[in-house]
Image 1 (cartoon, rainbow, N blue to C red):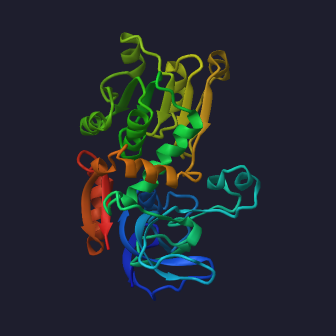
Image 2 (cartoon, rainbow, N blue to C red):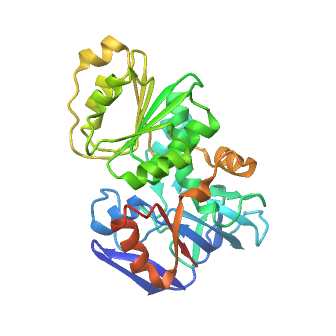
Image 3 (spheres, rainbow, N blue to C red):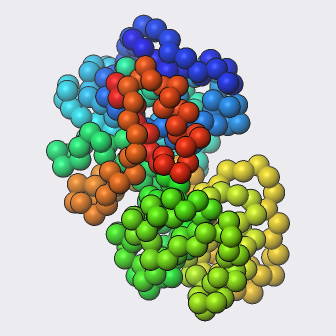
Length: 336
């Protein structure tokens, strides 16, 4: 089979590997479609601290069940999407429903081989059946939208919220859709530094957009007398947290999705004086079923994020497009 492998930082290639056999409790999936994520780029460039090499990357993928390991009862040929979060089920985080921060966390495509391969073996419990109403294009987007589901579950969302989202990249757009189309927030403001991304934000549900390349956000909000009650950082720059604290309404919630190792400088007094709640979110804690239901009901329009599709052999073009064409590119899918 063909597998897309990061041999070492900076080196991405297709390798021919034996078709794997599912272990006990696993299923083998014939992968049909997968999405490229920013974390795949980080692994390629050696900036993901958790990755080990060589690694078959890819954690946004779906396909059909091709073979069963011992002890697995499932329908061969069934369409499934795979939750990449593999947890022990025994540690404290797992015991309180937070397997995404398991003490022995293994993420498919990061800690162990992922889905950019013609076949992949995964724990059967990580495979979620797809209803007919979720087509092949939408299926790999369940994982990115699970990120939005996780952070909004942490922060809570009210219809009365004035929400602000930093960043209109792929994850920012998932958050925008969830805030507007699932929760119906009263007002949704989105910031970015690229006009085409701000246009995409409007297309996905933003009521107001602000280009912070040429406008200071605090001044822009003061001019319209708005103090956000919910702020979600999907741009993930360490300087954002301090600004979010400054512009937030008293009693606001701030959600963080960033993974920067650089420090953020904040003043405790400003957090406490407003009694702000700051929530961090990593991956997803069992949100796939919720997102699949949103897709099946037509609550969300995940297909709006797809801008490019390539066959596996065109992987170099696919990765170059995703990394360097920020004005036109959102989600890139690989077709197997």
